[in-house]
Length: 473
Image (cartoon, rainbow, N blue to C red; front, side, top):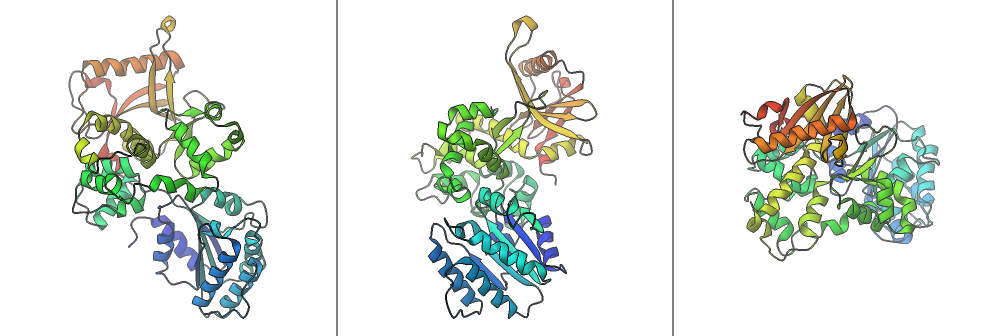
């Protein structure tokens, strides 16, 4: 049963009904549901299906491909010795098929691309020289190794350049889609509990599929992360190796970004990397952004230089905060629930959830139709100018010359703005005006779980967005 993914399903179904041959690439991070999506859409019925084998040489990859051909009815007289021969055999299988649309699904394509093999050349020959000249082929290739897929297939400079007829970048679920998942699988969670789960797992469907509806959030977290042999205890160790050919440098960049909440500039990251890794940094950052681990954004007022890279992946942030040191308590989350340790984490984690849901925030503010740029801002204290050190994590810079300065606050109940909070908010706005010298209008926007209490201090707030708004489509 597929939850959400309406656009992706429509793309595949349209390709299946097309009157020409189609070539579609599906890519995304580990556990995001790529294979499941394709199999479910086609009800596990393919003219040919094959999956590459991790960490195996060309000979074993070819043997496995030949075995898949046999499974779908072809009996090669001579096993293929290279990929050109293997794809010639695939042509023979397809020629014998009577299906109106011959659907070929090759999963984990990157694993088949072993050193010094001719896989990409053979794929080019198969598509350019044969399949694209027909009208009855639907070729779907899939890989978790996003950097490989981007380089070798999507942005290929050789024979596959501009040959794709469709691409599906599978993204994490939004809160709206997680709520659909909850309803489909009868999880007895409130919206507050869904947000807390999202803070830990992000929108990765596989992680959500492991939740047990017999337990609450705390027990589920313990069973998935902290119990003996917990299924997700080692997930971080496999995450980057499944996505990238050289996982160490990616993990290093992620670890560096995890040390600074607001993000870092390129030069800052490069300076903390080993010298022999710095040359790869541009591609590494692009790959991490494509996979949704980080976001790249401009600080307010900077148009050309000064791009910041910020770690926003909920699961990775949760790992660094609680799992990196491997707590020995198998009921760690239950025992720490409500503690200052977890409460302080919730505040930061909620900010990341908000950053994943900026379109929903814009919709709640009634500005979906206005062009905007999302940025942040921070400054150091400057006593001569009357500026106090301040930081704003989310600014929505609008084409109508208005700015939404968003203050994101997690609270188990309705949030109360007291005198100290009002003074802090006023100081931020005053420092922002003085430091940036902006002539745009400013709306202080609170993004909270349950709204704010109306009192003598709440008048400073112009707009309020609640967690319910984040669940919108």
